[in-house]
Length: 228
Image (cartoon, rainbow, N blue to C red; front, side):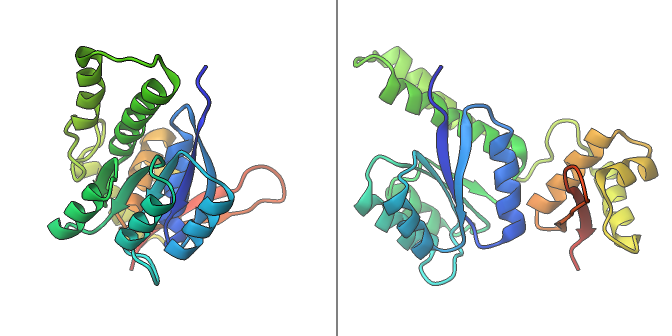
């Protein structure tokens, strides 16, 4: 079995960083090695703890994501970098791709888009660095085509629909306090898993916030509120 790919998350928004961690943890073969909130901290982390993949935001305090990526390339030419950012600026996208980013995912994003990117990286990384020394054109084309699959970042994932999404938003907007996925499911008469998918989508889209409610025992409860 291939070794798990260790990932560094570089994101200054704690809620988005938590979503990244949750999404990465849901894809087999990946493990989060660390989370930092600035380019400077990312460079220092990589000097101490080299990883195989970096999830990088563009809008960072101090050194932005483009400059951070360029510095990462000066330090390590082999580490993979997936940029996840709200920036739609073509110059920015061009700069990070030319600097060697494996992929560029535009916020708001859905789990399926991140999953596609991670799996594409995983297949290419494991084959080129852990497989046989030689590869033919047919196999290489197959690996590269995985990366080129078109997944719309702004479309709702399969199984979600605009009407239910609006109902979830309305419920959060009128709630006196943040709601859990169980409370959302009960109010809208949908399954807890379905409710959680809508809630996580809203957080990833920047329309809702996520906070953890810690109990005396057991796991903390995720609670969601509509962003004001």
